[in-house]
Length: 390
Image (cartoon, rainbow, N blue to C red):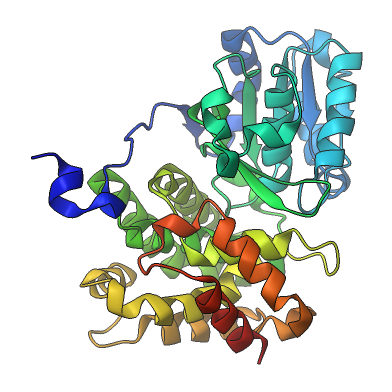
């Protein structure tokens, strides 16, 4: 009997594939030239954002490039949530300089934008046709230009993820998902995160926690992913406050970057309603919302919604976090958000009740929704949103 017959269609096996090349250690950035050579990249485009440039991290990257690449083309206008317009602008720079690969330097936004550029540099037609919700994954081939991802935050896990999130011109934030979008190399250097401000450390860290928790709760069967997710969740819980309090705490920074990596390695199993909603809300032009902060705010109410559908998984999560038996997981995360100084509601983030219906519809169509433990409906999404807007 096939696993799908025994356990139900919603619990079909996930593809287990962790084959990507990762350098993880303080000072790993120094090996960038070796990775460029291994991939045969001779004319890379660097995709980053203005904050990274102002922080001096771009200068650190350029300093380790081979002498022939010390004046590389750079696209630094990545918006907080990558857009189709930004993809087009970065792609024009890529083509103008006859580039043959991309170096992504930054958080999830530059890395996702770099993936989208690598896709559209090698694939014809409109970007929308490659979106997961349009069954576009089958159209994405191994021709995708090589990407080297260098994260400067400890949150998204995009450096090892198979997805890129891009807001199209019509306002929909869609996922582009394929194993061919996994960066060929990931350089995880915790030293690059020591200058991250406390607020951003908190928000990106809670993003990593949401990835680990939602992956673990996904009904798809993937024990390796479950083990990685539990390990990553525990690392966040034990270290996020240390990293927020003292950004120079090298051990805490190492642990948080490893936790983010764990989230990225595991969320190929699927996410859930937290991300269904945060992807929808992230497509709003106003206000511009930070993905990690959205996930932090949405995680407790979604956990309450899913409680009855999770079996013994909440107890296993609580144990991985080191919580006392009987501790309410949603309450514990809500309390952690407060200690970290994160918002307690969407209302506090400037979101108006008038968007509820549209956001619920978009969340229902998101590629993360099918792997939520509880079957979602538009009405349930509306209920969630109204509760977090109260």
